[in-house]
Image (cartoon, rainbow, N blue to C red):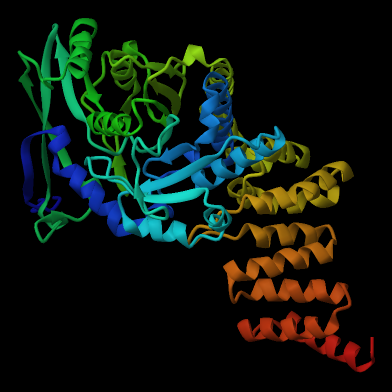
Length: 528
């Protein structure tokens, strides 16, 4: 017989409105505790923090700024402010700023200025951004600022470097807001429609006693959820713009449960106040974009991955914008993430370049489409030849994250690779290096670039990247051994001997290193 499970259930809360659930407090505590480490093999973020999605956004924003100054020539006298909500690792910010500056330079646009605000509710992340070497040039140029911003509370939004509060005085031009993988992690309300009746979905949470410490759950993924329903017979939000959405769903949906991203809508409403109701929002997340896809759903599913997340009801957000006189563009449905664009204070059809850019980079070749194709290559890269891998790197904008996964395969294919392809990859290695955004506990792209040049016998370039990698790699045997090999081929025997000896200190068992030391000492003694 199996032993009886003696773990006792602990009731955490009962019959709570979802937006008031303890889950959201636990979520905030998790991110505040983990800081930047939340994005190291815990919370998924690559899908919205890569060069491709940043380029999509940059092209839309570039078109938007050009459209706006054509309609409002006086706008050139003021910078365009852009703000990322829940910035997290900072990698998207880096790629976006870099790409937008490149677009301005390529099109010789010198009279349009912008400021970028990286925001989060935890100080730990801000400290990481302030000290990040990839962001340092932009900080020194005055392009980047930081803000401690709690999307769940209407508090002054203070810009740390400017030492001023974000306000309508600064936001003369429309504020552009980026919301990637953030609307899915702040508060939602939950509802059920059945037979043209609307019910509030109330949450009860429980867990095993063994998962409790000091009256708090230890692991969120071990929390169980139960649901109760309560019929809504009158105005729920006492807000015509929001209640109109519930009325629509009550009439159009038949048998389903759905979420209203109330925390996100409150944050948007607050930002609209700050920017004179002139707001452009671009968001990529998992979620629903069409009302027909909200029908016949079960109770909300909670995805745990260190933190937790929900499917975003982008349709509800678009209805909120439209009900308040704004506009929205929702990507047509497809599997995976979706990108949406929302506007307040103007219509997207009044901005021709912006409209084309949205069509090109949200609909025709969206971040979702990119990730679908990338995933295919990622999962089968060992099957591809060098030409295919090189083409994928170009398509991905020479993304270090991808190269780190396929670097050993590329190196192994060099001996049989086409000369033109090898040359093409070598030519783009500086682009790869320029895209490096270091994260804790991750491999160093500079070292792998050094390995590539080492493999094609470009020892001077290999040594250059090995030396750059030392700051990130530290005291690693392979780094100093490889540096010494390059210096040997470049006939820098004194340097080679120094680095061979250092490598031996790091790995005293390496007989090859001992042999190289003997060989190099003999070469120096003979004056070679």
